[in-house]
Image 1 (tube, protein in one colour):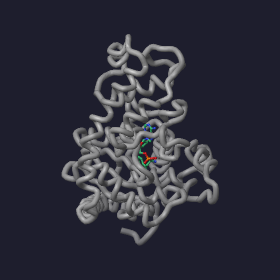
Image 2: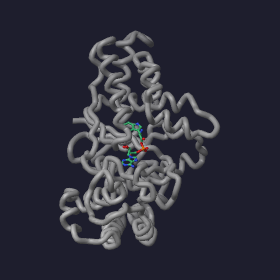
Image 3: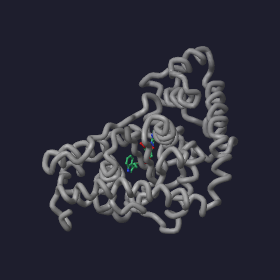
Image 4: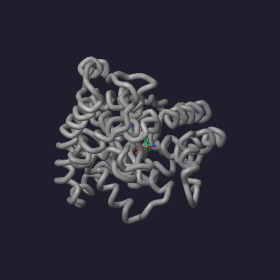
Length: 328
Ligand code: TYM
């Protein structure tokens, strides 16, 4: 089974990325042939700084390796090093409906937030994402809940391509975690945790120091009333229960049972302690890895070479099926 996912080198990675994405990437190494891409081309769809983009790409690579991605057990590469992605994205536009792209909620949300230029790249983003996945004839795509619509679109694109030009693509399935697919902002538990959140305090970064972790959980917005249990009237506490469940690798029900008689203060302190312990080794390994640009570059270059061998074979088939380019 082949697994593919992508992560953007934008901003600092937070607990939502970690739980919704990175934890599943690490697990994927045990379950199949795992391929992960740091999608720098996707990061150019909103305002960005070129020097910073380069830095954040290394930074993201260091976080992924620190979290447990092992270049001997997966392919880890930088998207722009495999130009087949951009070529395939163009070819896929021929079977992508303009109206479908207009319906993408992430495009609507992100374009509404742009102060200056709403780029064509932002509109086109899901097609490049489809190319990322389809180029590897991927079976499974581990992502958080916010990417479900994009995976559904790439399935539609694959199905339409296969019926128009012959069976070229595997129709991929999203793999969305049961718990933690949508980690919420600690200050506003009705919005998802994100890099572009209104408040720093609401976003828990993977590299936050223990004191910051403790402060952010202590100040996390909870709900009126009492009782550590999940429910639609308790978005703050529900979110913290999910976080603790994932970090301890237990079911949320077990967390509810354990803290049935606890107050919010004690519960928040327990979440902070568990998350601190959980992220400490990641931060430590990150500190050892991130300064060595040459070593990171070596990993990414080797990954790109392996990725390219797979993607270029797919592209040769796709070009042939579509009748573009010199005949084989
Ligand atoms: P990115 O970098 O924004 O997010 C990386 C992963 O983190 C998940 N995520 C969350 N999960 C739970 N709770 C949250 N609050 C939260 N915020 C983010 C995202 O769902 C994602 O899995 N479009 C992708 C990048 C991409 C990609 C791909 C993914 C490009 N090509 C091909 C899969 C396959 C993205 O937004 O990543």
